[in-house]
Amino acid sequence: MTFNRNFKVVFFMGKGGVGKTTCAAAFALKASLKKRTLVVSLDPAHNLGDVLGIELSDEPRKIADNLYAIEVDFESMINKHLKNLTDKIKEIYGYLRVLNLDRYVDILRYSPGIEEYATLDKIMEILKSNVRRRDYDIIVFDTPPTGLTLRIMALPSISAVWIEKLMRLREAILSRRRIVEEITGEKIKAIVKGKELEIPSEKEEDPIYRELTCMMEEVKFVNSIIKDDKLSTMVLVINPEVLPIIEAKRALDFLTKLGMKVRYVIINKVLKVSNGESLPKELRVKLRQEKEALQLIRKHFKEQMVIEVPLLYEEPKGLDKLRGFGEYLTKLVNDAVV
Amino acid sequence: MEYIYVELRELENVFTLLILGSFIGLPSPPTTISLRLLPYMAREIIVSMSVSGRLNDMLAEMAGLFEIT
Image (tube, rainbow over the protein chains, first blue to last red):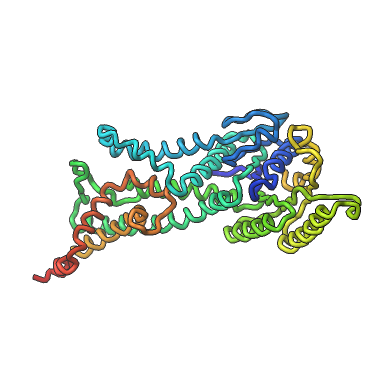
Protein backbone atom coordinates (compact mmCIF):
# COMPACT_ATOMS: atom_id res chain seq x y z
CA MET A 1 0.00 0.00 0.00
CA THR A 2 1.47 3.40 -0.97
CA PHE A 3 1.31 5.79 1.87
CA ASN A 4 0.44 9.41 1.16
CA ARG A 5 3.15 11.29 2.98
CA ASN A 6 1.25 14.54 3.35
CA PHE A 7 -0.55 13.37 6.42
CA LYS A 8 0.56 13.57 10.03
CA VAL A 9 -0.16 11.50 13.11
CA VAL A 10 0.36 12.83 16.62
CA PHE A 11 0.29 10.65 19.75
CA PHE A 12 -0.21 12.26 23.17
CA MET A 13 1.09 9.97 25.91
CA GLY A 14 1.56 10.15 29.64
CA LYS A 15 0.56 8.98 33.09
CA GLY A 16 -3.13 9.08 33.96
CA GLY A 17 -4.33 12.51 35.11
CA VAL A 18 -1.47 14.64 33.75
CA GLY A 19 -3.69 16.36 31.17
CA LYS A 20 -3.11 14.29 28.00
CA THR A 21 -6.71 14.69 26.87
CA THR A 22 -6.73 18.45 27.46
CA CYS A 23 -3.44 18.84 25.58
CA ALA A 24 -4.62 16.60 22.73
CA ALA A 25 -7.92 18.46 22.42
CA ALA A 26 -6.29 21.92 22.57
CA PHE A 27 -3.64 20.89 20.05
CA ALA A 28 -6.28 19.49 17.68
CA LEU A 29 -8.41 22.63 17.98
CA LYS A 30 -5.44 24.88 17.19
CA ALA A 31 -4.22 22.63 14.36
CA SER A 32 -7.72 22.67 12.82
CA LEU A 33 -7.28 26.42 12.09
CA LYS A 34 -4.84 25.36 9.36
CA LYS A 35 -5.55 21.68 8.63
CA ARG A 36 -8.40 19.17 8.61
CA THR A 37 -7.99 17.42 11.95
CA LEU A 38 -9.37 14.31 13.62
CA VAL A 39 -8.84 13.74 17.34
CA VAL A 40 -9.35 10.17 18.58
CA SER A 41 -9.66 9.09 22.18
CA LEU A 42 -8.21 5.62 22.74
CA ASP A 43 -8.43 5.86 26.52
CA PRO A 44 -10.94 3.35 27.95
CA ALA A 45 -11.76 6.01 30.58
CA HIS A 46 -12.81 8.62 28.01
CA ASN A 47 -12.61 12.32 28.84
CA LEU A 48 -12.41 13.81 25.39
CA GLY A 49 -16.12 14.53 25.14
CA ASP A 50 -16.09 16.11 28.63
CA VAL A 51 -13.11 18.32 27.74
CA LEU A 52 -14.67 19.43 24.45
CA GLY A 53 -18.08 19.85 26.09
CA ILE A 54 -19.72 17.73 23.39
CA GLU A 55 -21.03 14.18 23.57
CA LEU A 56 -18.98 11.90 21.33
CA SER A 57 -19.37 8.44 19.87
CA ASP A 58 -17.58 5.87 17.77
CA GLU A 59 -18.32 7.88 14.61
CA PRO A 60 -16.51 11.16 13.78
CA ARG A 61 -18.49 14.12 15.08
CA LYS A 62 -17.93 17.67 13.84
CA ILE A 63 -16.67 19.89 16.68
CA ALA A 64 -15.67 23.01 14.76
CA ASP A 65 -14.64 23.91 11.20
CA ASN A 66 -12.08 21.33 10.11
CA LEU A 67 -12.21 19.47 13.45
CA TYR A 68 -13.79 16.09 14.09
CA ALA A 69 -13.60 13.86 17.17
CA ILE A 70 -14.13 10.19 18.04
CA GLU A 71 -14.34 8.37 21.35
CA VAL A 72 -13.60 4.74 20.53
CA ASP A 73 -16.16 2.36 21.99
CA PHE A 74 -13.88 -0.22 23.63
CA GLU A 75 -16.56 -2.84 24.07
CA SER A 76 -17.49 -2.77 20.37
CA MET A 77 -13.85 -2.55 19.35
CA ILE A 78 -12.94 -5.73 21.23
CA ASN A 79 -16.13 -7.49 20.07
CA LYS A 80 -15.37 -6.63 16.44
CA HIS A 81 -11.76 -7.76 16.77
CA LEU A 82 -12.83 -11.06 18.34
CA LYS A 83 -15.72 -11.60 15.93
CA ASN A 84 -13.31 -11.60 12.98
CA LEU A 85 -11.20 -14.20 14.76
CA THR A 86 -13.88 -16.41 16.22
CA ASP A 87 -16.11 -16.45 13.11
CA LYS A 88 -13.36 -18.34 11.29
CA ILE A 89 -12.86 -20.76 14.19
CA LYS A 90 -16.60 -21.40 14.43
CA GLU A 91 -16.80 -21.91 10.66
CA ILE A 92 -14.16 -24.61 10.72
CA TYR A 93 -15.39 -26.17 13.95
CA GLY A 94 -19.07 -25.71 13.09
CA TYR A 95 -20.19 -28.72 15.09
CA LEU A 96 -19.50 -26.73 18.27
CA ARG A 97 -22.76 -24.83 17.59
CA VAL A 98 -24.72 -28.08 17.66
CA LEU A 99 -23.30 -28.88 21.10
CA ASN A 100 -23.78 -25.25 22.20
CA LEU A 101 -20.09 -25.11 23.04
CA ASP A 102 -19.40 -22.10 20.84
CA ARG A 103 -20.08 -19.79 23.78
CA TYR A 104 -16.86 -21.01 25.36
CA VAL A 105 -14.94 -19.49 22.45
CA ASP A 106 -16.28 -16.14 23.71
CA ILE A 107 -14.02 -16.46 26.77
CA LEU A 108 -11.23 -15.44 24.42
CA ARG A 109 -12.09 -11.78 25.04
CA TYR A 110 -10.33 -12.11 28.38
CA SER A 111 -7.10 -13.47 26.89
CA PRO A 112 -3.95 -11.48 27.63
CA GLY A 113 -3.11 -9.05 24.87
CA ILE A 114 -6.56 -8.89 23.28
CA GLU A 115 -7.20 -5.32 24.44
CA GLU A 116 -3.83 -4.17 23.11
CA TYR A 117 -4.29 -5.86 19.75
CA ALA A 118 -7.86 -4.60 19.42
CA THR A 119 -6.62 -1.03 20.07
CA LEU A 120 -3.84 -1.49 17.51
CA ASP A 121 -6.45 -2.81 15.05
CA LYS A 122 -8.48 0.35 15.59
CA ILE A 123 -5.44 2.58 15.01
CA MET A 124 -4.73 0.65 11.81
CA GLU A 125 -8.35 0.95 10.66
CA ILE A 126 -8.33 4.74 11.15
CA LEU A 127 -4.97 5.16 9.41
CA LYS A 128 -5.89 2.88 6.47
CA SER A 129 -9.20 4.68 6.04
CA ASN A 130 -7.36 8.00 5.87
CA VAL A 131 -4.83 6.65 3.39
CA ARG A 132 -7.75 5.65 1.12
CA ARG A 133 -10.00 8.67 1.59
CA ARG A 134 -7.68 11.44 2.79
CA ASP A 135 -10.41 13.00 4.94
CA TYR A 136 -7.85 14.45 7.39
CA ASP A 137 -4.47 16.12 7.25
CA ILE A 138 -3.74 15.45 10.92
CA ILE A 139 -4.88 12.64 13.19
CA VAL A 140 -4.36 13.17 16.90
CA PHE A 141 -4.49 10.15 19.23
CA ASP A 142 -5.24 10.67 22.91
CA THR A 143 -3.77 7.43 24.23
CA PRO A 144 -4.53 5.34 27.34
CA PRO A 145 -2.21 5.70 30.37
CA THR A 146 1.43 4.90 29.71
CA GLY A 147 1.49 1.18 30.61
CA LEU A 148 -1.16 0.14 28.10
CA THR A 149 0.10 2.58 25.44
CA LEU A 150 3.65 1.24 25.60
CA ARG A 151 2.37 -2.32 25.19
CA ILE A 152 0.32 -1.22 22.18
CA MET A 153 3.32 0.59 20.65
CA ALA A 154 5.55 -2.45 21.19
CA LEU A 155 3.08 -4.87 19.61
CA PRO A 156 3.99 -4.22 15.96
CA SER A 157 7.70 -4.80 16.61
CA ILE A 158 7.11 -7.91 18.75
CA SER A 159 4.60 -9.27 16.25
CA ALA A 160 7.05 -8.64 13.37
CA VAL A 161 9.73 -10.76 15.09
CA TRP A 162 7.31 -13.64 15.70
CA ILE A 163 5.76 -13.50 12.24
CA GLU A 164 9.18 -13.43 10.56
CA LYS A 165 10.32 -16.55 12.46
CA LEU A 166 7.06 -18.36 11.82
CA MET A 167 7.30 -17.58 8.09
CA ARG A 168 10.85 -18.98 7.92
CA LEU A 169 9.72 -22.14 9.72
CA ARG A 170 6.70 -22.45 7.45
CA GLU A 171 8.95 -22.13 4.39
CA ALA A 172 11.09 -24.99 5.74
CA ILE A 173 7.95 -27.12 6.18
CA LEU A 174 6.71 -26.37 2.67
CA SER A 175 10.15 -27.14 1.26
CA ARG A 176 10.18 -30.60 2.94
CA ARG A 177 6.67 -31.26 1.60
CA ARG A 178 7.85 -30.48 -1.94
CA ILE A 179 10.75 -32.92 -1.54
CA VAL A 180 8.32 -35.66 -0.43
CA GLU A 181 6.08 -34.88 -3.42
CA GLU A 182 9.03 -35.07 -5.82
CA ILE A 183 10.03 -38.44 -4.44
CA THR A 184 6.54 -39.97 -4.29
CA GLY A 185 5.29 -38.21 -7.43
CA GLU A 186 2.06 -37.09 -5.78
CA LYS A 187 0.69 -34.59 -3.27
CA ILE A 188 0.76 -35.51 0.43
CA LYS A 189 -2.73 -36.30 1.63
CA ALA A 190 -4.26 -36.22 5.10
CA ILE A 191 -7.60 -37.22 6.57
CA VAL A 192 -9.17 -34.25 8.37
CA LYS A 193 -12.75 -34.52 9.71
CA GLY A 194 -13.25 -37.71 7.72
CA LYS A 195 -12.30 -36.05 4.43
CA GLU A 196 -9.15 -36.73 2.44
CA LEU A 197 -7.36 -33.45 1.73
CA GLU A 198 -4.29 -32.56 -0.27
CA ILE A 199 -1.74 -30.82 1.91
CA PRO A 200 -0.37 -27.57 0.40
CA SER A 201 3.32 -27.44 -0.44
CA GLU A 202 3.57 -24.06 -2.20
CA LYS A 203 3.40 -20.68 -0.46
CA GLU A 204 0.49 -19.56 -2.65
CA GLU A 205 -1.62 -22.63 -1.73
CA ASP A 206 -0.88 -22.58 2.00
CA PRO A 207 -3.54 -20.61 3.96
CA ILE A 208 -1.20 -20.40 6.96
CA TYR A 209 1.57 -18.76 4.90
CA ARG A 210 -0.97 -16.43 3.28
CA GLU A 211 -2.28 -15.40 6.70
CA LEU A 212 1.27 -14.80 7.98
CA THR A 213 2.04 -12.69 4.90
CA CYS A 214 -1.13 -10.65 5.45
CA MET A 215 -0.21 -10.10 9.13
CA MET A 216 3.30 -9.03 8.17
CA GLU A 217 1.96 -6.43 5.71
CA GLU A 218 -0.31 -5.00 8.41
CA VAL A 219 2.51 -4.80 10.92
CA LYS A 220 4.85 -3.19 8.36
CA PHE A 221 2.15 -0.63 7.53
CA VAL A 222 1.79 0.42 11.18
CA ASN A 223 5.55 0.45 11.78
CA SER A 224 6.11 2.54 8.63
CA ILE A 225 4.00 5.24 10.24
CA ILE A 226 4.82 5.15 13.96
CA LYS A 227 8.56 4.77 13.44
CA ASP A 228 8.85 7.52 10.82
CA ASP A 229 9.37 10.78 12.68
CA LYS A 230 8.44 12.78 9.54
CA LEU A 231 4.95 11.26 9.70
CA SER A 232 4.48 10.58 13.40
CA THR A 233 4.99 12.89 16.32
CA MET A 234 5.18 11.53 19.87
CA VAL A 235 4.38 13.98 22.64
CA LEU A 236 4.90 13.10 26.30
CA VAL A 237 2.73 15.00 28.77
CA ILE A 238 3.96 15.25 32.36
CA ASN A 239 3.34 17.26 35.49
CA PRO A 240 6.16 18.95 37.43
CA GLU A 241 6.29 16.14 39.99
CA VAL A 242 8.88 13.45 40.45
CA LEU A 243 6.73 10.34 39.81
CA PRO A 244 5.32 11.40 36.43
CA ILE A 245 8.83 12.49 35.38
CA ILE A 246 10.38 9.13 36.25
CA GLU A 247 7.57 7.28 34.45
CA ALA A 248 7.94 9.55 31.43
CA LYS A 249 11.70 8.93 31.34
CA ARG A 250 11.09 5.16 31.34
CA ALA A 251 8.53 5.61 28.56
CA LEU A 252 11.02 7.71 26.57
CA ASP A 253 13.75 5.04 26.93
CA PHE A 254 11.30 2.28 25.97
CA LEU A 255 10.04 4.14 22.90
CA THR A 256 13.60 5.00 21.84
CA LYS A 257 14.51 1.28 22.00
CA LEU A 258 11.53 0.55 19.75
CA GLY A 259 12.83 3.09 17.23
CA MET A 260 10.28 5.80 17.98
CA LYS A 261 11.42 9.35 18.51
CA VAL A 262 9.80 11.52 21.18
CA ARG A 263 10.38 15.11 20.10
CA TYR A 264 8.20 17.04 22.53
CA VAL A 265 7.51 17.11 26.24
CA ILE A 266 4.66 19.18 27.65
CA ILE A 267 4.98 20.07 31.32
CA ASN A 268 1.38 20.68 32.30
CA LYS A 269 0.07 22.42 35.42
CA VAL A 270 3.20 24.42 36.25
CA LEU A 271 2.47 26.61 39.24
CA LYS A 272 3.54 30.16 38.39
CA VAL A 273 3.30 32.89 41.02
CA SER A 274 4.51 36.48 40.89
CA ASN A 275 5.59 36.79 44.52
CA GLY A 276 6.61 33.51 46.13
CA GLU A 277 7.56 35.05 49.48
CA SER A 278 4.03 36.06 50.42
CA LEU A 279 2.70 32.54 49.99
CA PRO A 280 1.79 30.17 52.83
CA LYS A 281 4.56 27.76 53.82
CA GLU A 282 2.84 24.75 52.16
CA LEU A 283 2.77 26.45 48.77
CA ARG A 284 6.37 27.65 49.12
CA VAL A 285 7.42 24.03 49.72
CA LYS A 286 5.40 23.02 46.68
CA LEU A 287 7.10 25.69 44.56
CA ARG A 288 10.52 24.53 45.68
CA GLN A 289 9.67 20.91 44.82
CA GLU A 290 8.36 22.04 41.48
CA LYS A 291 11.62 23.90 40.76
CA GLU A 292 13.55 20.70 41.52
CA ALA A 293 11.19 18.73 39.28
CA LEU A 294 11.72 21.21 36.43
CA GLN A 295 15.48 20.81 36.78
CA LEU A 296 15.03 17.02 36.64
CA ILE A 297 13.01 17.44 33.45
CA ARG A 298 15.72 19.54 31.80
CA LYS A 299 18.25 16.85 32.79
CA HIS A 300 16.28 13.87 31.45
CA PHE A 301 14.78 15.43 28.33
CA LYS A 302 17.72 17.33 26.82
CA GLU A 303 16.91 16.29 23.25
CA GLN A 304 13.23 17.14 23.43
CA MET A 305 11.50 20.47 22.94
CA VAL A 306 10.04 21.23 26.37
CA ILE A 307 6.85 23.28 26.53
CA GLU A 308 5.54 24.61 29.84
CA VAL A 309 1.84 25.12 30.37
CA PRO A 310 0.83 26.92 33.57
CA LEU A 311 -1.73 25.68 36.05
CA LEU A 312 -4.81 27.61 34.98
CA TYR A 313 -7.28 29.26 37.35
CA GLU A 314 -10.17 27.45 35.70
CA GLU A 315 -10.34 23.96 34.29
CA PRO A 316 -9.90 24.25 30.50
CA LYS A 317 -13.20 22.67 29.49
CA GLY A 318 -15.18 23.74 26.46
CA LEU A 319 -13.96 25.15 23.16
CA ASP A 320 -13.34 28.74 24.34
CA LYS A 321 -11.11 27.74 27.23
CA LEU A 322 -9.34 25.16 25.06
CA ARG A 323 -8.52 27.91 22.54
CA GLY A 324 -6.83 29.80 25.37
CA PHE A 325 -4.97 26.67 26.44
CA GLY A 326 -3.94 26.07 22.82
CA GLU A 327 -1.97 29.36 22.80
CA TYR A 328 0.65 27.67 24.98
CA LEU A 329 1.02 24.95 22.35
CA THR A 330 1.56 27.33 19.39
CA LYS A 331 5.19 26.31 18.94
CA LEU A 332 4.24 22.61 19.01
CA VAL A 333 1.42 23.11 16.50
CA ASN A 334 3.62 25.14 14.12
CA ASP A 335 6.39 22.58 14.34
CA ALA A 336 4.22 19.48 14.02
CA VAL A 337 1.72 20.71 11.45
CA VAL A 338 2.76 20.48 7.78
CA MET B 1 12.75 -40.84 2.50
CA GLU B 2 11.79 -41.86 6.04
CA TYR B 3 14.12 -39.19 7.41
CA ILE B 4 12.42 -36.49 5.34
CA TYR B 5 9.03 -37.59 6.67
CA VAL B 6 10.37 -37.48 10.25
CA GLU B 7 11.95 -34.08 9.67
CA LEU B 8 8.70 -32.76 8.14
CA ARG B 9 6.67 -34.16 11.01
CA GLU B 10 8.97 -32.64 13.63
CA LEU B 11 8.98 -29.24 11.87
CA GLU B 12 5.16 -29.27 11.81
CA ASN B 13 5.16 -30.27 15.48
CA VAL B 14 7.51 -27.40 16.39
CA PHE B 15 5.35 -24.99 14.38
CA THR B 16 2.27 -26.08 16.33
CA LEU B 17 4.10 -25.81 19.65
CA LEU B 18 5.17 -22.26 18.84
CA ILE B 19 1.64 -21.19 17.91
CA LEU B 20 -0.27 -23.03 20.62
CA GLY B 21 2.46 -23.44 23.20
CA SER B 22 0.75 -21.20 25.74
CA PHE B 23 -1.55 -24.12 26.54
CA ILE B 24 1.44 -26.03 27.91
CA GLY B 25 3.28 -23.10 29.44
CA LEU B 26 5.58 -22.20 26.52
CA PRO B 27 6.03 -18.56 25.47
CA SER B 28 3.82 -17.97 22.48
CA PRO B 29 3.12 -15.17 20.03
CA PRO B 30 0.65 -12.39 20.80
CA THR B 31 -2.71 -14.10 21.24
CA THR B 32 -4.18 -12.63 18.08
CA ILE B 33 -1.48 -14.23 15.89
CA SER B 34 -2.28 -17.66 17.37
CA LEU B 35 -6.03 -17.13 16.97
CA ARG B 36 -5.72 -16.00 13.35
CA LEU B 37 -3.73 -19.12 12.44
CA LEU B 38 -5.79 -21.54 14.53
CA PRO B 39 -8.55 -22.13 11.92
CA TYR B 40 -5.95 -23.50 9.49
CA MET B 41 -4.07 -25.68 11.97
CA ALA B 42 -6.21 -28.85 11.92
CA ARG B 43 -3.56 -31.05 10.26
CA GLU B 44 -0.75 -29.60 12.37
CA ILE B 45 -2.70 -30.32 15.56
CA ILE B 46 -3.28 -33.91 14.42
CA VAL B 47 0.46 -34.29 13.76
CA SER B 48 1.32 -32.87 17.19
CA MET B 49 -1.09 -35.20 18.94
CA SER B 50 0.41 -38.13 17.07
CA VAL B 51 3.95 -37.06 18.08
CA SER B 52 2.98 -36.57 21.72
CA GLY B 53 1.33 -40.01 21.71
CA ARG B 54 4.66 -41.53 20.74
CA LEU B 55 6.75 -39.61 23.26
CA ASN B 56 6.23 -42.32 25.87
CA ASP B 57 8.48 -44.69 23.97
CA MET B 58 11.27 -42.72 22.33
CA LEU B 59 13.43 -45.83 22.12
CA ALA B 60 10.89 -47.58 19.91
CA GLU B 61 10.53 -44.40 17.87
CA MET B 62 14.29 -44.22 17.22
CA ALA B 63 14.48 -47.94 16.55
CA GLY B 64 11.75 -47.57 13.95
CA LEU B 65 13.54 -44.64 12.34
CA PHE B 66 16.83 -46.48 12.04
CA GLU B 67 15.06 -49.76 11.14
CA ILE B 68 16.60 -51.59 14.10
CA THR B 69 14.70 -54.83 14.70
